[in-house]
Length: 245
Image 1: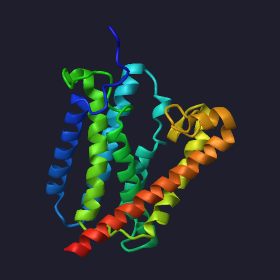
Image 2: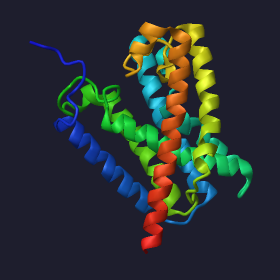
Image 3: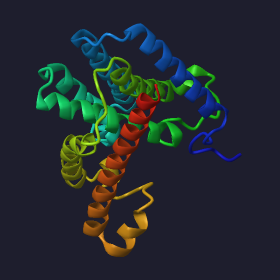
Image 4: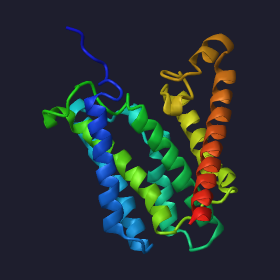
C-alpha cells in the first residue's frame, strides 16, 4: 500500500477544508461587524497567538522538544508581528499605514498561497475523519482562515483603504522579516521562507546550478516582486469595484 505524503490537492479533504475556511471567514466578519476598534484588533491578535500556541504546544508535547523548523519566521508568521504593531500604532500614523498595507497584502498573499497549495498544512490523511488524526491540519486551516478573515475585515471595516503606494509600503516589514529569516536559516541550518536549501521551491534548480548567493538573491527579488504585484492587483480590483458602485 502506498502511503501518501500529503492529501491530494483539490481532493475531498482539500475542498472541505476550503469550505470550512469560507464559513469561518463569513461568520468571523459577521461577528466582528463593520465598526473598527482597537478591541477587535486585539481579539484578532490574540487569536493568532492562540492557534500558533496550539500548534507549537502539540508539537513540543509530541516530540519532546521545540520544532526548530517552526520558529515563526515564515511568511505565514507575519500576522504574529504585524497585528501587535497595528494594535499599538497611533491612528493615521506612518507606522499604521505601513502596518495596514502589510497586514492586508502580505497576509492575503501568504494565505492564498497556503490554501490553494496546501501541501505543508493538509496532512497525509485523505479524510478529515477521524478528527484525532487531523489535529495539526485543523489548527493550520483555522489559522489560515483567520488570516483570510483578518484581511477581509480590514476592508469591510474600512480600517484599510488600498492605495497603489501600498505595494512599496508592504515590502518594508516583509524585507525585514526575510533578512531575519535568512540569518537564522543559515545559523541553525533551516529553510525559513525557502531562502536557504530551497526544498519545494520552483527556483531550486538555480541553487543547484548557480549557487547559494544567486539563488537566495533571486528568491528575495522574486518574492518582493510577487508581493508588490499582489498589492497592485488587489488595489486595482478594489478601485474598480468602488468605481462601479
